[in-house]
Image (tube, rainbow over all chains, first blue to last red; front, side, top):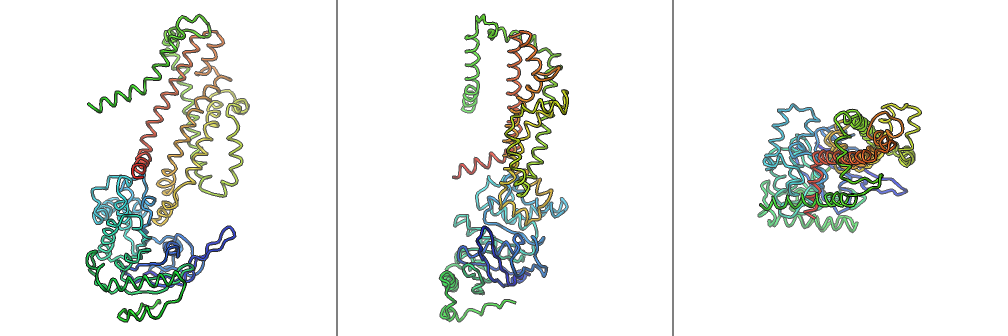
Length: 276
Length: 262
C-alpha cells in the first residue's frame, strides 16, 4: 500500500546543507499498522512530510497504492502532533471535521453521516457544536482523528500525535487508535519517539538511525492482537521487545553499527521482513 | 442580585468619567462671556435648533454616505491587495519599499492632488477617504496573511483545501484579527478625512457646515457640530466593536482559553 524507495531529503539554505534523510526504503502493507521510532531529531517528521506529499524528496520516491506521490494524495489523511494548531479555531468541531469532505465534494447527506460516524467513533458526539479551544488537549486530538477518519483514507499518517498530551490521555488515545485500526482496517503509519508506544501499538516497528537517517532495523511485534494497557505492558515479551528497540536506538545515537549480540538475545524474534 | 450589582458597577465605571467631564465643562463654562467659548448650556440649547431633520438629511447623511463608500472601497482594496502581497514573498519584496513610502505620506496632503484629478465632487471625497484608510488595512492584512500558522497551512494542504477554499476557510479567517485591527485604525482616519475633504471644497457635509458656522461667527453652532462629530465617531466605534465581537468571537474565546490554561 505504501512504498518508500531510496528516499533522501537534503535541506539547503543560507549556505548550510543538512542531510535530514539519507536513504530510506520500506513498505507498509495494506491494513498494517507500522510504527516508526527513532532518536529525536532523526528526521521522522521530514520522512512523514515526504510520504504525505507535503515535501518533495531530493531523491527516491514514495508510492501510495502504486501511484507516485507528487502532492498530498487524496486517499491519505494526516494527524499532526500540534492538535491546537491543526484544528481551525474559527470553526466548530463539526465544521472542522466536515471541511475536508466539502472539498471532496461529498453530498451533504453523506457528509452529515460521515461526520456523525467519525465523531461517534472517537466518543465526541456531544462536542460537535463546541469550538476546539473549548476542549481539553486529548479531546482536540480526538477531533483531529475524527477529521482524518471522516475523510475515509486508505492510509493514515500520524506524526507523534500524542506527544503533547498527558500520560493517561495518551494511554486512552493509544487504545482508541488501535481499536479504530482493527475496526476499520486502515493502513496506519505512526511516527513516535516513544519506544513503549511504538511496541504497544505496532504490528511492526521500524527503527531509524540518527540523522542522516536510514532504517536501522525492522522488527516484527509478535504480541497478540488483543492488547490492553494493563496486561500487554507487563508481558515479558513486551519487555524484551522494548528493551531491544531501546538498545537499537541507543546504538543509533552512538552511531555504532548493530551489535550482533543484541540480535542473538532475541533468537525467538522472527527475522525482520525484508524491504521489497 | 450579584449580577445586577456587577452590571450596575460596570455601568457606573463606564459612565463616571464622561459624566464628570460634562459636569466640569458645564460649570467651567457657565457664565462665560467669551464669544469663542460659549457656555455648554448655550451649546446644548442650540443643538436641536441646528441639527434639524433637514440638516441631518442635507449635511450629515451625505457625509456618512461618503465615509461609508470610501471606507468600503478601502476595506475591499486593502484586504484584496494585502492578501496577494502577504501570500507571495516575491511580490512583498517588490512592494514593501513603495508601501512604506506611500504610508508615510500624510493623507490630507492628497486632497489637493486628488482634487486635480477627481474634481471637487463626491468622487474626490470618497477617493480621499479611501486613499487614507487603505494603508492600515492593507499593511495589517499583509501581516495577518503572512502569519498564517504553518501547521494549519499543512493541514489544509494535506486535506486538499487549496485555492479559493483555502482563502475562504483558512487564510482570511486566520488573518481576520489583524484585518480587524487595521479596519479599526482606518475608521478613525476615515472620519478625519471625511471632515477634511469637506473643508476644502464642498457645498454640504459636516465638515463644510462646521467651517461655515465658524466663518459666520455662529460659534455655539460650530460647537454643536463638533459635539455631533464626536458623537458620530463614538457611535461608529460602538457599532464597530459589536461587529468585531461577533466576527472574532472565536478569537477572543481561544485567547481567553489559552490564558486560563497557562
